[in-house]
Image (cartoon, rainbow over all chains, first blue to last red; front, side):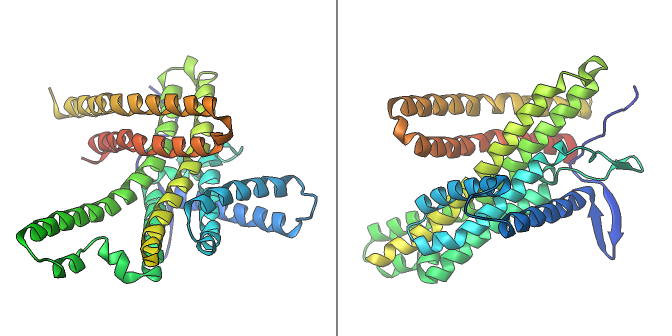
Length: 261
Length: 76
């Protein structure tokens, strides 16, 4: 059987090395996406006017939609304003990354390897994004109130209030819940990154498998799958950003809300 | 049965069994969400957001299954 389709492995192909750093095709694609995004963003910002033109109205629509979501999530409007750029950057980067292969002329090969590959089908990329979100949520919570933030995980203050055996048992239960919270934070990183990776990777893999079944399935049959892929890519970009808003706002609100008492 | 065949069967079973629960869960979320939007169309935006987020949370179980089967297939 002749292989006309490229094999999609978990590990992206290494194209060349810059010093000790190996540059893979996922890297290269994301560099291109970054340049594209910065260029389009600068163009839209510099040519913005009161009556919006097309690109400006697209950006403004997205910004307003996410502004509503972020404002709903955070109790503190000033913090919400500071978080909004992070969420928007994540959204645009992930959205363009998911739809990247729809651009024509990008399935260029060199030495039988694709030069570009969807960055979100590389687990390290989504893991990095997940770590970025979760670590920044902790940094924000710590910057608001370190004492209250750590009190969620390690219940030392409760130990000082122990007066009886019942209190002690209660403290054991609370520390166990604190331990569960710590595990929850690790699970957050895995779930948010594996969700994005899994959806996009499964979409790509499904397309490749269907194209590879036989000659008859390689022309019209993959089209619905690609339509589904576009839809899933858009939904997952939105979901990633909504989940990051949830993670960031839950920790920030839980630290801030107790300060009123 | 060679280990390769067992790997394939394990990956397929993991994905097949593991996606039953999330599928039922997402179905019931969508039913309730759309019912809610039908009853109260003004709250559609809020309901839709919460629906998507809870679907994503449920879906992570299926995604874990996918990751496990990918590990069985490629990594282990």
